Image (cartoon, rainbow, N blue to C red):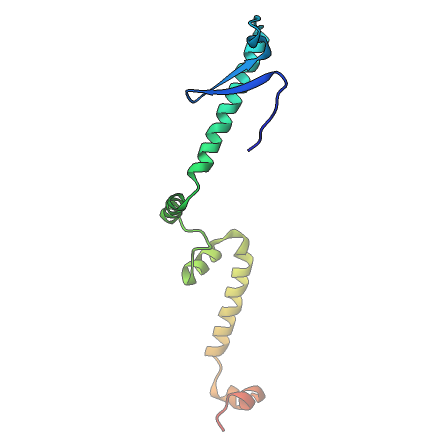
Length: 136
């Protein structure tokens, strides 16, 4: 929290409302419209700060963390919460991954085609197949 010190302003708490008084009020001198506008602006600022502080205070503590976790679980899943095929499908659908997906699909289709058309004669004549896959 930030606290500012003003030369002529003093802040008092009364019935949960901020009341600002100036040195002029303390001596019973009259206000100008400028002073009233400044006072209203400062009161509005402090009310806004208090509302923001209350929001922060409401988000603290075990109960608030449980409530926030439940709210996250109720919403749509993020990619960090996805696993397995669900994550893979999500990534495939992403526009930025489209060139990679097209390339991967092309290579996978080519490999599948070559594997299914690899005949026994081809295996017999392949040095690689004979060295690493043929049963001796």
